[in-house]
Amino acid sequence: MPQPKWYTSGRSSSLTSLLKTPVKTFRSLSPISYEKRARRRVCWRVTIIVSAVLVFFGIIAAITYVSLVGTLIRQLNPPKVNSGLQHIVNDWKEPDSKGAYQFTWRNDFSRDIIPKSCHSHNDYWRSVPLYEALSYGCVGIEADIWLTNDQKDLLVSHSWKSTKPTRTLKSLYLDPLVNIFENRNVSTASASDKEVGVFDADPNVSVVLLIDFKSDGHKTWPLLQSQLEPLRRAGYLTYFNGSEVVPGALTVVGTGNTPFELVIANNTDRFVFFDADLNDVSNAKYNSSNSYYASTAMKEAIGHIWFNRLKGSQVDTLKEQIRAAQNKGIKSRYWNTPSWPVSLRDKVWFTLTDNGVGMLNVDDLYSATRWNWNWCVVAGLPLC
Ligand SMILES: *[C@@H]1O[C@H](CO)[C@@H](O)[C@H](O)[C@H]1NC(C)=O
Ligand SMILES: *[C@@H]1O[C@H](CO)[C@@H](O)[C@H](O)[C@H]1NC(C)=O
Ligand SMILES: *[C@@H]1O[C@H](CO)[C@@H](O)[C@H](O)[C@H]1NC(C)=O
Ligand SMILES: *[C@@H]1O[C@H](CO)[C@@H](O)[C@H](O)[C@H]1NC(C)=O
Ligand SMILES: *[C@@H]1O[C@H](CO)[C@@H](O)[C@H](O)[C@H]1NC(C)=O
Image (cartoon, rainbow, N blue to C red; front, top):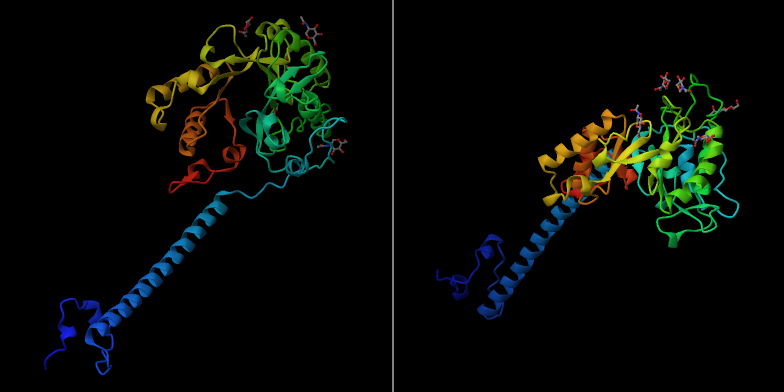
């Protein structure tokens, strides 16, 4: 039987037969227009089927991806620690003319918080200074101080321009710390007593307050000494008594314009320690009787990190410096470590902690203290 002309035409798609499009030859249509219509219909069907399949698999893939990432984040993201400190962080208010933020003391102040050798870099810049760092278990905090023109107070700020009369060393740091120590009965605790510091989990841990002198060191020093005097008298401060460093609940370290000669001037009751230069830590003048930290910008120690990789020689320099400080009983600290990309940041964190860095200087407290760094980047996705 002779096939209709359109059926045998070379342009006829194999899909036509595949999808068994009903061929209705009785229609009073010319064979050409019928073929066109049929093919268009087939095309539509194919498009719809393919799209449906793609959408279906797309949705499955999206659901899988979202639930995987969600599970991962839930798994890695530890539950919020419900401590007294967390409540303070949630409710905190800026100090006003009456002074520091006041709160009702709770006995679960530091419950479930594990203290860590982490330094809250530029702590006063956080939305909640001091308490937020402590709530993450970071034992190191930092305040930049400026002497007022009348030399009567010490203001805390990164630049003189952004200082505020209510944001003082006392209102942001010293008074809140005294309040914590009083409520935790630090001064009444004897050496053998268990309650001697901020953290329940390890009461022996001292909080380290790094004070960065921004104004003239010699003019700032006497006022800092007098503001620390009540804490010294209460027995809260770590001090050097002429032969030994006697640990206290708070260790004060001076950096920036802090004059080394004033730190060492008092050799029987020294309660402000120095932040030595880590690149010069072997210098004989630095030892644990006068220096608590030895710090440097990472770039000054090892130069630029090219192609997001630490070279072997750079790692060796870090190891050497960390060991040199350790041998003197001084804690090494690197600031301005890379924060991006996250994989490089974590690599640097791992390198430093694996080699026993004294204190890890961090900006992102949450990622540094709550995450498992091995899981910070998963499938190219930065999770922390
Ligand atoms: C501090 O001492 C008071 C009075 O002895 C006591 O009631 C309180 O529980 C103590 N606080 C801590 C944190 O031990
Ligand atoms: C705290 O220090 C004291 C005295 O050095 C020591 O006896 C005690 O074991 C320490 N406690 C902890 C939890 O390390
Ligand atoms: C310094 O402190 C240590 C430890 O507390 C003590 O044994 C020593 O006698 C003290 N030295 C002086 C001069 O007070
Ligand atoms: C050392 O500090 C103590 C306590 O603040 C003070 O009484 C003493 O005069 C100081 N000594 C020197 C040499 O500065
Ligand atoms: C520590 O260094 C000072 C000089 O800065 C020196 O006078 C003192 O003897 C040193 N102490 C020890 C234990 O080496």
